[in-house]
Length: 380
Ligand SMILES: NC(=O)c1ccc[n+]([C@@H]2O[C@H](COP(=O)([O-])OP(=O)(O)OC[C@H]3O[C@@H](n4cnc5c(N)ncnc54)[C@H](O)[C@@H]3O)[C@@H](O)[C@H]2O)c1
Image (cartoon, rainbow, N blue to C red; front, side, top):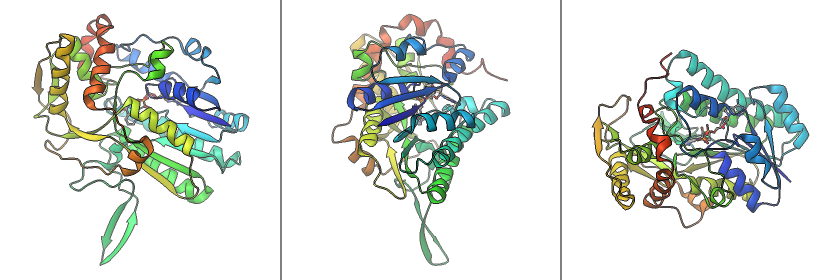
């Protein structure tokens, strides 16, 4: 049995590789073109946790092979699928930053070409290689739902027109060029399921926070942890700001609620989904979210937990550079995800404590790049 994991060198991909290798008796093949390392370098920043070269990182993990390659290359993808014949593909490779995709037209095009063509290549590749029984799992994003004024379903939406009702795919309401790539992927997965009869799970990942899992600590190989404006997601960036003694920047009043999930729960649910498999037919959608959190609540939680580490974090409000509703409630159904991850989820406080514990050890790397908390370097 073989699991092919794309984006294996990434923030989520690396700890997922380690848990798959630890918990499953299957061959794990990790694929990545190491582009994330280049994007962060290009933005003038670094991972707060020093990470080894890919070949060194993967060399020590039993049962794992690593392939350095670009999944936008159709021939490469087909070769990979024909060679390894994976029973499961976990597709976690992407250019995942909304602000990066918003810099200019060139980066929007790069993001859309990169993300959409990878998924298309993998779906067609599974069909062309005759791997119709394989389970294709993609981490898309809860961002595909936008911010509607009703509770967000775990998957499709009910629509009523001229007195008739039907269940339809949720509209593509992503708020960035990046988020729209995942709406395209969701639409292409739906088409591939009906055209090729593939087994597909669309895992809509919320904003992930965290710096470690049991496995990253035990192999002394941390996952990357970015804190810059382009690649640091909100919880992780705020924690880094607290460690650097830099004010925690809240956009506007901070009352907008954002869906969040810890790295631990993200990895655990993906590995459980690989183990559980797909019961055949249709697309299973999971809202990989523990709960929506208001940005101001988040900043205050970080400031409070920060006191345990003698951090004196100030919360400051800045004018919101993003087009978004200031007081959005954000309610999201997640029963299927909760069933997948099991009863116990990591609380926000525990996740923040883990992150701060990791970051205080690397304070120097953060303070040396604290000007990267704000946009600026990548303007064209
Ligand atoms: N981190 C989050 O908060 C979050 C939230 C929602 C969704 N997601 C999704 O989860 C997945 C993993 O995200 P992440 O945070 O680990 O990002 P990441 O950038 O750390 O990992 C993605 C990896 O994909 C690789 N990659 C990109 N393009 C590639 C290509 N053409 N060929 C081969 N490899 C390529 C990158 O080098 C990187 O290592 C992505 O699909 C992302 O959209 C992440």
